[in-house]
Length: 336
Image (tube, rainbow, N blue to C red):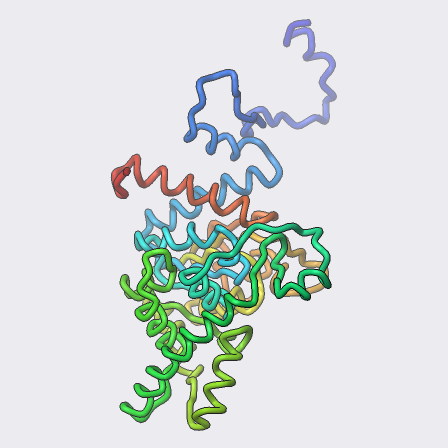
């Protein structure tokens, strides 16, 4: 039956949407082209289209020379997304990092000893008896924290000497800069942040094993302090002084809120990309969509924005691949 013959079957009240983008996936019959493969996500529908939109929004952030804030939870560093983030920091593709205590300590631990692949289904009691901690399907043995404690004792002693020398407590971003310098490993996110002068903010520094180290430090030297007020001043100052800002948020929690809250002072970021599995039904900030942030002036109403619902360990490397591939094609980044 021809298209002309089909005309009579179309109801009178049916709107013609043929000018809209057509849904189409990647054709694997053709010779594989990675760039076309990634671009096909945009026309695939569902979260694939959101992923494609995320790539384009981050390209726009770069094109518009926005100051890019990357927020991520500690599980990103537990996983291999750590190497993706390290690459972005190494090549100065982001300008500000905001993370949790685990995002700091696990980056340090991995420069000393690796994490290993385990199983989601492992018996918790058996693992505990063997001194194994589980992060999803990633195993971390207790000895990792022994190495971490030794390293952190050395670093915090130096931080304390600096506090005494200048008669003023260091803020968390200054302490993290100390950590990055002391680690000195090219595998480390914090090392490259120190080297490239990219500030790393951690509003929950006293959480996790890092918090344990601060507790022990306070036991040894009761006048040891961490100034959290300077950090909020610094991150807001960066947001205020930026011509445009873009936020990339992996996961939720305090790192997400801290990043977005700084944008209020400039009446919202100009670009926003979220990647997480959280939903909004419980009213949590972690699960909130970008349009909720618009109501708080964290994101501008007309800002290109998208939330990709899904596991960032799958999604974020694909997003970065799309952006990096574009930068290499334009010879902004060198190919190796």
